[in-house]
Image (tube, rainbow, N blue to C red; front, side):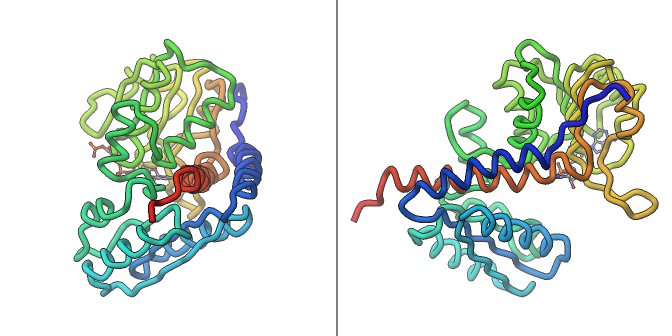
Length: 285
Ligand code: NAP
C-alpha cells in the first residue's frame, strides 16, 4: 500500500475538543434543534448521533420528533418558533422529509443565521459569491480532511464525482475557492476515468460502490470517499475500491472512519460559529 490513511476519527476528535473549548467560553451554551419527521431508521440513527455529539461537547440540543403525517404548516410553525428562540443557534431538519412536505419551503423557512446544514438558497449564495457564512457540513469536512494532508490545493486539479446540491456542487465551489482547478463529473460524463486519471484530488460523492478503482487514479493523488453504501456482506463501504486505490493514491479516506465523523464535527462547528455570532450581536429588544 502506498497511500496514507486520512483518519477522520482522529481529526474529528481534535476539532471537536477545540469546539468544546470555544463553546465553554461563551456566556450561554450553543443550542442545536434537530427535527425528525417520520420513522426512517437511517435518519433516526443520524439524529441520535448528532444529539449525542452535542451532549459530549458542551452543546445544548433539542430533538423534536413528529410522526410521518405531521403537517407541513405545523412544521413551518415549529421552525418559526425555533427561529425566535434565543437558546437555539442552529436548526437542522433531517432529510428526507415525507413526500407531502416540500423540503425547499422548509429549508427556506430556517433563519439563515441558524442554517447549520448550509442548505438554504441564501447560504448557497454566500458560498457561491465567496461571502462568509455557514457551509454545508459534508463538503466542509472533506476540505478539512484534505487540509490535514498538509498539501496545498493551489493550482491542483480536483475532480468531484457527483453534483448534488448538498455534496458535489458545494464541494466543487470550496475547492475552487481554495484555488484548485475543478472538474465536476456526473452520470452523463461519458468517460469518468479520463478525468480522474488527470486529477491530483478526487472527491467521490456518488452512492455507488467501486465507482473509483485503482486504474482510474493518478499515482500520489488525494482520494476522498464520501459514499455510503453496503457491500455484498452488508458491510458499510464507500464509492471507492479502497484496497485497490490505496496501492496507487498518496492519501485516502477510509469508510467508515473518514468523511462520516467529519460531517457531524462540522455540524458542531457551524452551531458553535452561529452561537458565537449571535452572542457577539445581541438581538435588539
Ligand atoms: P445524490 O444526490 O444521489 O447524488 C449522486 C451524484 O452522483 C449525482 O450527481 C449523480 O449524477 C452522480 N452519479 C451517479 N452515478 C454516477 C456515475 N456512474 N458516474 C458519475 N456520477 C454519477 O447523492 P449525495 O446526497 O450527493 O450523496 C452521495 C453519496 O454520499 C451517497 O452514498 C450518500 O449516502 C453519501 N453521503 C455521505 C455523507 C457522510 O457524511 N459520509 C453525507 C452525505 C452523503 P446526476 O446528477 O447526473 O444524477
